Image (tube, rainbow, N blue to C red; front, side, top):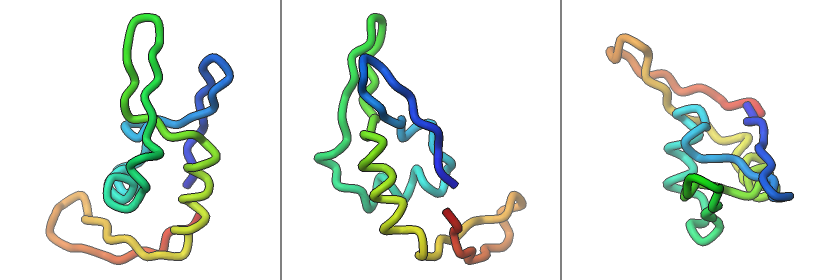
Length: 84
């Protein structure tokens, strides 16, 4: 599932913290860390941003891989095939 982008001063990006949990953990382990950018807004520094085009490229490369998701009860794990 793709996340909607944000735009600030012409920069189209997503925040890692706004991703679903499975994508968030996968990004931190498999995404090129040099492509994580910081965006300074008037009142805050966003230090977990990725250009939207880089996010889409990453999604395309990882769309057929399986991920492990724990059930809400925490008792079982199931492997699901992620669909983009």
